[in-house]
Length: 264
Image (cartoon, rainbow, N blue to C red; front, side, top):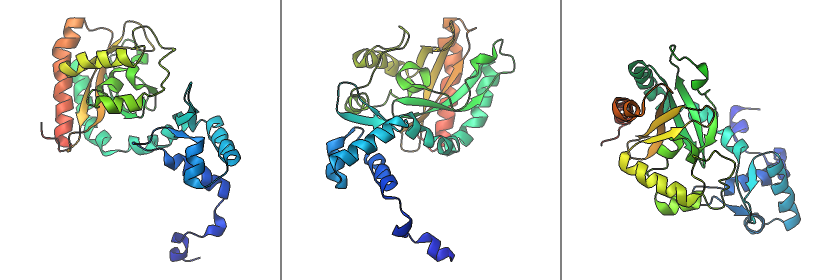
């Protein structure tokens, strides 16, 4: 088979059931975060029974999740994880690396770069301090957390218009997290309103007591928040964390943004 032939789609090799499953996943988009079985039936011209089996299979394998008290489905962790390798190689990681290293050296603390995918935040880069008293402060690359519950995640929610925030968290289950995490959308909006004025986010660690993370967003050439960086260390007094550490953090975030073409 020639190179030209391999580039031409041959319907003989397409598996219809897999194609329909992929078509359902392709229905999810930035403007269409929730998909129902009737919507899929209408859009793809398939029966309700076929659509139900496809949705069930995708849900059972972690690609989509049913929204509580709703007939809709949203993308779930398996779908989000598929893009992780791409995110890890994203230009911002290469640009941010020397700045994360410098921020680590300036503060003596571990620093991270995170990106948001839907309602989840993924750590894609880490500069671990060799002087950390507790190695667990360095969150492994690839770790994901609910965006609203962690510093980098909320830093990436600061610039979202309220209507987009409403769509993003429509039907979202805010339960099963510690009490210091916003417990519902109203609490999240109130927290973001304060943090938006500050220009940075301070959040307690989800996994270790007495650890606080401070984060700030990174913007691209069009001014969009595409990533966030944080500093994590349980040793800083609050006045240091929101004083000179915060200043170094904001300087690093601004430097990365400038390198990406952002004009403040």
